[in-house]
Image (cartoon, rainbow, N blue to C red):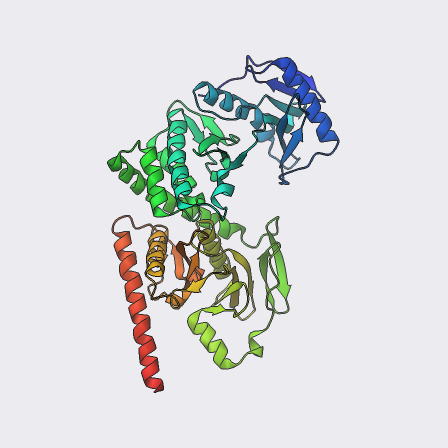
Length: 471
């Protein structure tokens, strides 16, 4: 069920064919389009320098106000089929208008434009009114001054809105926090935006809903279990039994989606691009994230054999005054790509630090650097804290929902980080201890609790044995 724009008026301006929103005054829309094209020609600021997508914020004067101009430009390397079909901007305009007619508030564009060379699409444009005082949900959740009460209210509001969107027939292939705007005010009023990868359907089935919910859940990095349950309760209209069913579906769909993401990252690992660059230091070579801090280039031969043996045993080196964790491993380039994919997946899910760089030597030695939080402490250093133990249990619970964990995982490889509001979260600092596999649905929290208790007990026994033997 795709909304059509056959009745929408169209006209030519600056070599671009524009389709106007039927609910907008045509004269005002034409004036806004002409002013936007003039501002774009004079060099407006580009807020998103992507490979194909650009985003401009335009101030068109007091009479017209502020607008956002989205632009997608297609080069010669784009497939012929994509360049022959209708532009994305027209579909976004139609979907936003349809949602507005169904009572879902969203910034409706006033016009959508296409530039073609013959029948081939060269670029498409979308002119959207800018709403002052709004910020996307991803930026709002990452603010250091956010409180648990605000996050709980946002989770409930997001669950209700996503349920309304699904009931309206919106199938969104890019359901993410940055596609929701939050208006300023005491009550979190959410607005859906960015329907570039969306479709309108007569009905959204259970499997499609589970897949979209799993996609959104995977991008809510750092969200607590309570916030996720509040979201599902709001999505299920306060039906606890139905919310538990959605929870089970969400776990299975999240595991399947994580496996696909892991395979995609592993295929693209090491490719030169906007985010990653190839690096080479003497006998070491690999890749690093662009803009990564300077790393320690010291060879292993400059350290004593005892230090090398200790690092291999622990698998994790903590730099005393540095902002990085350093993991060591052995294996081929295939193993290095799998290790990088593990680190990227854990970071995107909020279960591990951000990977910075990875290098490999000809003798199959691998080093991986991870960004270290300033407040991070290993679980072994903070094992007496009840909050640290509870955060570690939540970490293992989330890891078991995505795959398997090394049964000999050391508490040194679990870091406890303090949030801005004072709460604790745990993250895995050795991606080699995680294996993407089939998820565990039932009894996962109890398994995680037993795992942490056994690992801490074994570590305490080992420390006492070493202490006694030293005496």
